[in-house]
Length: 114
Length: 115
Image (cartoon, rainbow over all chains, first blue to last red; front, side, top):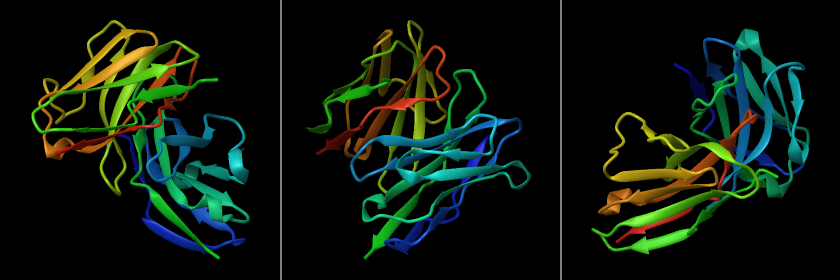
């Protein structure tokens, strides 16, 4: 069964500092991996996704993530955090192709301090 | 492109009543739609998957008679919470996937409060 682990429930960073949110997945084959962001009371917005090819993927809002098969990880990074980045971030994994379900991690809440 | 809307965005109802939530794909044909539930400070839990014209497939532990899902067209799916109780209060989010899409597109969510 597929699963996602986000080990950090809550992270606080200073504005302008770098950010890395961790994500580890469990999946038997080549996964599709996603990072979503959710602002309070809002739906999900896709930040980036990995299907195949270059293991370093660029997303919106200056985010990037690196797929490391050997570590079963897909960590999200941003070199300089802005106050508007404060939100909840969800990592998700799904099977390649098809119309099957995506499994979400528990989420990491990011707090940005001045 | 690939926009999904939900209506209503918020609903408050009395215990025992039924509530219908609509999920629409605005600019693509959604062959598959998903309904999720999110409790405060928790992740999204998949409730059911529906393919257009077919019965929904419910996840284990989800009462199909309580959470009625209809996917009658390629742009509309509805979730009806029947005989709602306070424990059904939650944030319900739908997503949709069309032919050729490798990802789901999420709606903005519906906040249900049952008094």
